[in-house]
Amino acid sequence: MTAVNPIQRRKLYQDVVERLMLRIQSGEIRPGDHLPPERELMDVYGVGRPAVREALQALERSGIVEISHGERAKVVVPTARDLILQIASGTRHLLQSQPDMLDHLKEARLFLEIGTARMAAQKAGPQDIEALRARIEDQRAALTQMERFLACDMAFHREIARVSGNPIFPAVIEAVFQWAGDYYQPLVRAPGAEQLTLQEHTRLVDAIAAHDADAAEQAVRAHVTRSNELYRRIEQERAHS
Image (cartoon, rainbow, N blue to C red):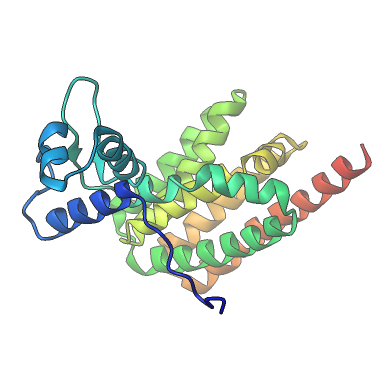
């Protein structure tokens, strides 16, 4: 008789990870604390050095601990940015292997940016507006420096997400820009795109400053939709090149 759901054999390092996580979650080992030495972990859990090291590497990949050469692993508090950027390489591979995913990413970006723009219009104070206008001026000053212009563009959208007050939104916005980087960069290199981007950003900040959530949504929708149309044109040109 064949088992319908056979029990999967766990690897030793997975047990070590689970037990260390229980100690971290219970507060026995707190953020900033070093984990016990490898030899102690080997003795406590009855495993060899390879299992301990593989467990520590798994925790490091998850952003739970950091490992410095010559020092014991230390528990850290991962930020939203750290956690989201961990899936960057996998996301890029997904976009390259499944082109339809790019449309889903663009749709997700529009949904997210509309939401953060509306929240910014509701919550922005004078200092927030000043910071947003400063981001536009930074970008204007970088018109002849393409890499810096791109960085300033992302910083502008990240600043709007920051005003929302939710630390996850800025991290997601930054990740979306990085994931779609190969497609995004040609947008600001298109003839006249730089000035048009600055105009659209200014219109969006004006709406946020007026605390007009509907106008902010319209501004960001026009901005991102224009970008999506350029995405489509670039994809068609690549397909025929």
